[in-house]
Image (cartoon, rainbow, N blue to C red; front, side, top):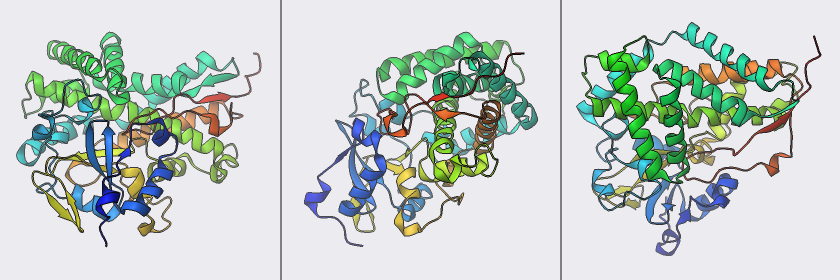
Length: 398
């Protein structure tokens, strides 16, 4: 493999611009030709990083905690609090930003709390929530499935699992949205921090059968600060990416010829569509960030010390070196290695149940505008629609 020239390496790709959000795969393809599997990027105007779009390189990085630890504390010393991407990248006492014994301690607590979720009860909760939401707009003949279905469903289901009262949950959702969008991110981070602290205090006083209470009761004996940061991570993984997974999969089923002809005939399963979206266009497209403590030579590319290395799950899954592997679940949408997502089965269940329910309830649903007129929200990390407008036949009067 031949490293790129110094001139090519200096041409950084701006991942925060609307053009990147509009067609990231065209950018991946172009930069792959210029730079190879490791691309110099800016995730913010003042935040340089390396974006990994080579599948093999990503797998090695994700399994190498020595050369690629997830601790950003040295890096963030030079990053102002007002930087819009800092809340998504900064150090927190949780499994995502720790290594070794501390990572194991945090991860064990999270795996235990998540593992106790009753899958049958979760399925019933998703279906009941979906039914309530669809009832609210089914007679209109049109809806924004992102704002009126995917987002409120995810919010309500996650709040129930976390044992979170609505008043606190709304503040958490508001703060998390600002953090993901990178707009007023510092303010969003502050809102989020106070809201999760309030949830911890509430569940310490009123324990229940929920994820927050189980984290509190875990033998790891997490203190209030550690508890708050576990919840930030769970909400970060549980709201935005899941909303986008539901929305993006519905869009795929309404527009992709592989699926749209069989949506109403039952020829293509929702699970197949989910796996296709997770492979080719995952909702959390670029993340799994690490911070090399010293310069690392990876296949002839020198990665600077303490500069973020961002894994492009979307870019890696589409690496031409893999060949045509559509439908293969060996994708990186859930990450890999010691930081692989511990809530994968929950996310699958929620997304599949929600999509199946809305397709069954609105069998003659179509996209309300040409797909090319849809807007993708700017941001270096997510693959997120601004809206998903649809039309459908209204039910016959009783």
